[in-house]
Image (cartoon, rainbow, N blue to C red; front, side):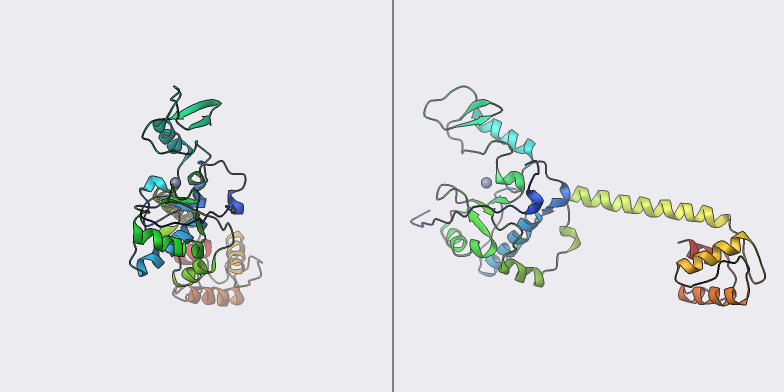
Length: 283
Ligand SMILES: [Zn+2]
């Protein structure tokens, strides 16, 4: 990586939403997809996206080494850890304590945090692809702080940066957010978005079905009718913002209000409560 030297290690301020969470077991609502693959805590995602755009404007591409090098679940961190560390002692190799035991780093493997101990488990760390590349590292050194990022271990892990500014969104990120209102596609994981869309569709079908079966039980009512259905219609008119005294008597006043309601719903202004008008009243 040449002669580039830097020393930007800033302590992490945790967002409030990450206090008292189980690392690697974050609620999906805290995570956002990033365009290059993977997920980050939503504050880190904004700071990352803003920085990626700024780098791009300077001709530098920033992307994670892989989607797994953004947010890591506890289980994926554990799989990675177990592939790099062993219980059988190896002399002169670094060790980690995990589940009460000493683990030895396998020869030729890069060190890795124990499961639950990494900032990747909080969704605030990213490993940058080819971070040590001369142009890229120079750009990063000059710019990471503006977007609220810093390294954790320098200079041996130039790829690993984490978002340090917690809930205090850096100005450069705020500026970026003004120009880039978040598209809906950026909210949640694909599975979460699909589940939400399905739940919404199911709720709509359910409410339409209920409404239709209810509508079928309603009589068509008009001027001079009296009774419970009239009273219910009057109450529903009021609920929709067309105040109507619920006296159960379909007089000229009620008829006039029904016409106003029908007009507001682009229905024929018949002054009679037919199926379409009941449907509108019950929706
Ligand atoms: Zn990392």
